[in-house]
Amino acid sequence: MRPMIHGERVRLRRVERSDLPRYVEWLNDPDVRDHLALVHPIGLAGEEQWFEATLRSEPSCQPFAIDARGADLQPETAAEPWVHIGSAGFHEVDWRNRAGELGLVIGRKDLWGRGYGTEAVRVLARWGFLELNLHRVQLKVYQDNARAIRAYEKAGFKVEGCLRQSRFHGGGYHDTLVMGLFREELR
Ligand SMILES: CC(C)(COP(=O)(O)OP(=O)(O)OC[C@H]1O[C@@H](n2cnc3c(N)ncnc32)[C@H](O)[C@@H]1OP(=O)(O)O)[C@@H](O)C(=O)NCCC(=O)NCCS
Image 1 (cartoon, rainbow, N blue to C red):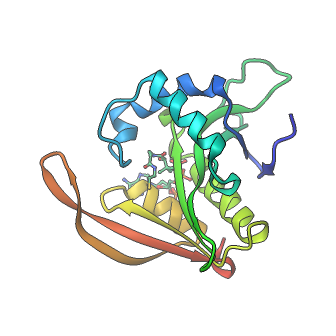
Image 2 (spheres, helix red, strand yellow):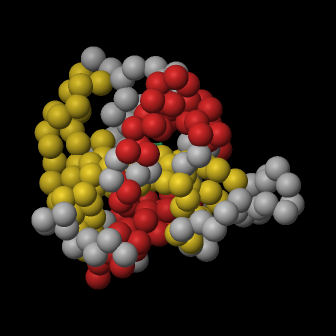
């Protein structure tokens, strides 16, 4: 298979049905899901429905699987160095204003803090600017998600605003940051 979008240590490819059990495992992990807009537990049947729906959605908004290669990964075979570590994509594109809303999860939490998330953001944003002709890439991130904010800032995103008390979680209200990126700001 020829993947569509390549970085140095990260590539983005289409999600396959065989990836879904990993999504179920990752998205039920409290350390991962606490940072996402997920409330209910995820099951394989629901993930399969989600997968079917993505196939019918606009191609630019279909999610990508993130594969990585590196010395810290244990591939199943030496011939295939790429390991599935997460998911990323534009879950919404406003074509009139050419703005894409980016989402990102590195499900393999044992690999957090090693630069894979930042590289995936860079690769996806670059593709959005150079191939989709986006003018802006934007996202929302919970204010307590320091790791994600740092990863986005490393890629060049700037905090543009705060949606105060916009998330109810753990019995209380929390702030959400809005971040944005223009092509010339991408690092
Ligand atoms: C957010 C996420 C995508 C980042 O991916 P990652 O591969 O861990 O990110 P990177 O390693 O590229 O960068 C993380 C940076 O945050 C820093 N960091 C980690 N914990 C931190 C903390 N508590 N405070 C501040 N910075 C922190 C790391 O040191 C690193 O910065 P550095 O390279 O300057 O040292 C990943 O952790 C993840 O998927 N988390 C769960 C889901 C999620 O939060 N998704 C985003 C929703 S908006």
